[in-house]
Structures are given as C-alpha cells and as structure tokens.
Image (tube, rainbow, N blue to C red; front, side):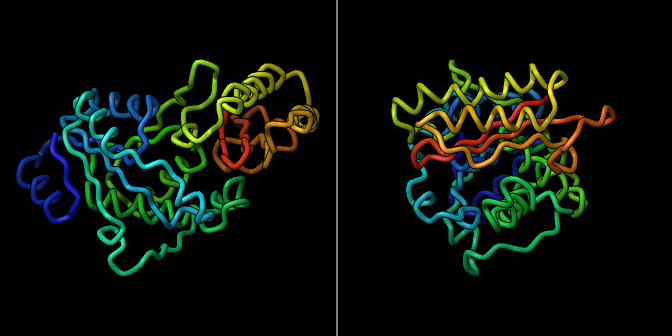
Length: 279
C-alpha cells in the first residue's frame, strides 16, 4: 500500500504506474469503520486498483466545534486500509486541497441542495460538491463509491458529475449498520454509552414507517415519529421527512408511480445523527 500526502507525488505515481487500469475511488473523512470498509471491498471487487482519500473537509462544516471535534485517527485508519488490501491512500493537507483559501464553489443542484440537510446546514452541499469535484478531478476514477446513509449527498454528487460531464460512474452502496441497527458513522465514536444503547430508536422508527407506509397517511406517519421522539429524553428530532427518491421534495400523499424514502436527523446530546430507509 502506498500513501501520499501531496498532489504532485500522488499524481506522478498514478500516471506512471496505473494508466489503462480501472480505478475505484472511495472518498472518506477518516475515522474509518466497517461501513467504509464495505465500500472499499466493493471497489476492490470491481476495479483493478483502489484509491482511498482521507481528508476532513472544512468547507462542509457549518459548526466549527463539529469540525474541531471530528475524530481523527489516521494511524489506525492506515492500519485498517493496509489490512484490507487498499492500493493507494491519499491524505492531503487543507493547504494542498485549498491552495487559495478554504472557499467553496457555488453549485446549482436543481433544488436538491435546498431540502432536508440543506435547510439545516446552509452551504454544506457547496462544500461537499467542491471537495468531491476536486478529488474526482485528481484521481480520475472509473468508479467512485458513496454510501446511501448520506442519500441526499449521493444524489447531489450524481447530479454534479452528470452536469460536469465527468466520465465517472457513481456507485451507491447500502447502509452498513451496527448490531442494534444504528447506521455506522464516524460520529458514533463520540456518543456516550447510554446514547449509543438507545440509538436503536432511530432504526426502529424507520422500520415502523416502512411497515406502515401503505397502511397510514403520510400525515399520520409524521405525527407518530414526532411523538416518539418528543417522549424520548435522549434525542432531539431535527427533522423527519418522507420524500420521493429523485426530487427529495417532502411528500404529502403517495403517488404509486414514484419511489419514496424516509429520512431522519436527530441530536443525541451534541452529536447529530442521520439515517434513512427505502419505502
């Protein structure tokens, strides 16, 4: 496994040794867990070589405290990547990725960026688009892998790649869960033991919504989820939305010609957790 922290060295090796080979790219912010590893394993099965990036992107954080406290475990991450058989790891500095300052580009994602996460994290998706665009331009992968836990992000990246006519296949990967159903996230490491034990509430709510989706109205489902969280002292619900899978517009009624997902964002103490499920 080769590790590079500068763009010059990384691209020199990539261009010299890996031309005419399929490249799978897995962009990460580190603090790797089994969810990340599932993406890397899929990339290994579908490409000649796999490139994993580790970069905590400052422009997608709205809360400076969240950025400062985001877990950074580079040594452990590299050991995991070595063990799983990753080929190349790119670990650039902020200066390397933002040589002209930490400023986001502005994107038009046809309104996808205005729903859910976009309402509560203004500018977040411009930051995501900026760093993913830069990474994809650097790596030039055949395939790039993103988890469905961040489903809105996944749609936005697909939209960006299409608009920019990048010859890259964006591969969605299933949500990887802990034993109690909690969607795996690097932020889970910051949960208290009590919050972590209780966090199965999120997945249970989503499963209930999935079970009742064709039996109850969307208004009833919304009310039930809000009531569950209101009566639970460990969690503060930020939003619950049932939306169609393409526009992400909140649904008021069910159109049999559309597909839907349910989305949740909640705070467990100071830690913000998101999850979703196909309906």
